[in-house]
Image 1 (cartoon, rainbow, N blue to C red):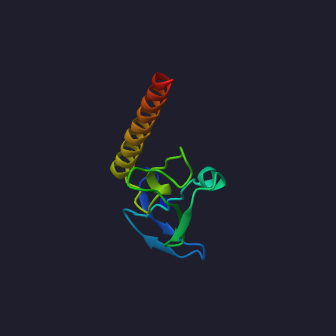
Image 2 (cartoon, one colour):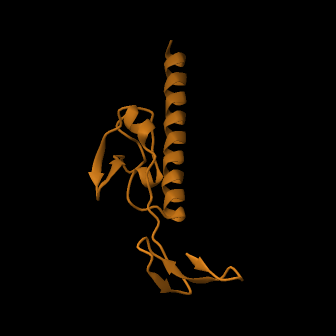
Length: 112
């Protein structure tokens, strides 16, 4: 990037030394999913568009019991609202599973 004395963008300098005048530059971010822990635990995944994605059900559950996933490790979308929504869904599912487990344990104790 080239800038003037006022630190305003003037242009772009390429590796070969060529310059192109510009007042603005837009770049697409490259998102990289941090899924090593999930895959290391044995969560099933697949390649999608060159990236690995952890497979989940509609509630955010992975193939590993008790392990949930949300956000860009589960699909190519990476917007903040979408990631928040998948996190909320997974959180709701975790809570429901914990309540179900508590009820099952309470019923089991009561029957003894």
